[in-house]
Length: 190
View 1 (cartoon, rainbow, N blue to C red):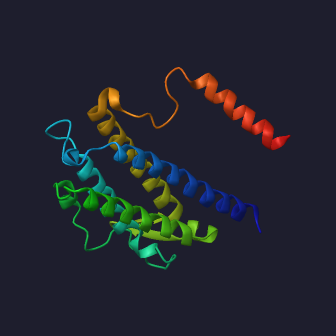
View 2: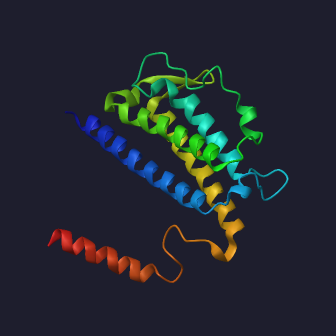
């Protein structure tokens, strides 16, 4: 195996793990959202959790639906049936609708990542007629999805206020967390 294929394989493993982590953060935020808040935005032009989930799911279906069983030549990364503008009109109002859209979109994205091979990363696909390598398309979506998940976290954290349950390291707890991580590393290596 050549060095570039090794790096490509490592990249695919890493991006899968990192995006599982991003999804987990979104899961943690959604778990703190109350059903009556699904349509709540922080401003007149802001997006609600329901709209953010609709948009993410729509983008994931459009970008990755054609790749969920593996790469094929001449793949279009923007499904002709997608109505992006409708993703920003509130449609989701129940937990079951929200969860179905959220999980359905991520399932498609992760299935596509799982079926990509290191050699696929240098192949091309188009998004709205613009040619991308698969690597470029993945990186584009990593940034896009992460951005919207962090918007979702900010939204729910603002709605919860002092009731917010931290999804990472709590303020003032960095030293204890670092010590715990070093201790675990020492136990594995020793």
